[in-house]
Image 1 (cartoon, rainbow, N blue to C red):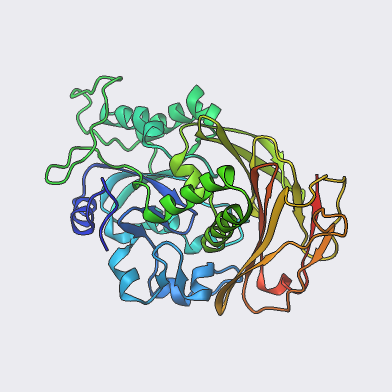
Image 2: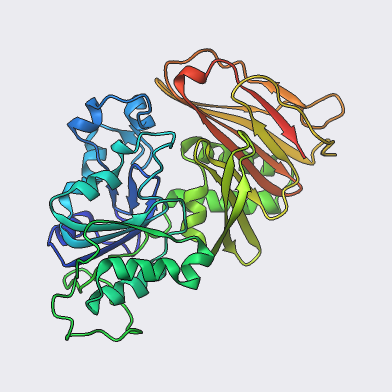
Length: 411
């Protein structure tokens, strides 16, 4: 499979990451288990991954399907893209991703994640990564990288980064796993100016530090972006067709990765999960000059909401029982489109159904999904196009809890 434009091919990238450069900085989309590196997928799949016992295994282990490579875990297609964490060699590694070290209370046991493998690797002296969902951009770690190249101890450099106004404003806090006194530059006399730009690698001549930019927009990204544009411009059957494409994209893996890759700025604030009502983080992404997305991140419900600047409709996915409309939305006739998307892990399958209408044309106040007891986790998403804006609410359900889920709409 050809690489996305502007990204290294697989073999040269593998070779670069195995060189043992003193400082390696990787930026890419990650969910705490794996990471998108364009032509490669940072994936901890091995014997321990497949046989480890836990009540919270990754969904890919249950389904046998990798959503990054869109292939079976044991397939040749996945093997060609997989980069195991043990293949990376570095004195210090910056894994700048959406979340590199998940919470202990996360939906998936973090012992299966790439972060733990990187931290335990004998080939990596120290690991710096994110411990909560944040926007990953190479620019966010340039000052940190420059400090390390000046010989600043890694603990001091990370602390300075975390205290910086830019990191605090964007919620980009980093975690250090390793010796805080470790220095990348062994001779502090050979300094790098504080404002010196960080050189990034090109094939055939890696500079130090080795830095890999986020992957260029994929073909799949292009299709989703085109469908989003049609949602705003089209009406009738054309708009419904675009909405169907968006639902299919959400069924695959959600859209938060796309927003992170396209975003040019971010901010964080405190919020509350719309489903379990627990405290949550609100991540604001400026996707385009006229498009902002707001992600509500809950430790238990993960990306619980992906909503516009001014949401028209709010959805609560309950663990069981009923959901109710708190106020009349006023969305009637063709003014809204709605769907329920489910993704079951074993056997791996997705299903999309229209959200039913009430007699007055508004979204039905209560929808009992009637999910039968399942031996595998299932993710439910409620998707609405309302007021010309896209709203996505989702929640993962553990196997033991997927007996009956009801979904309610509030505005």
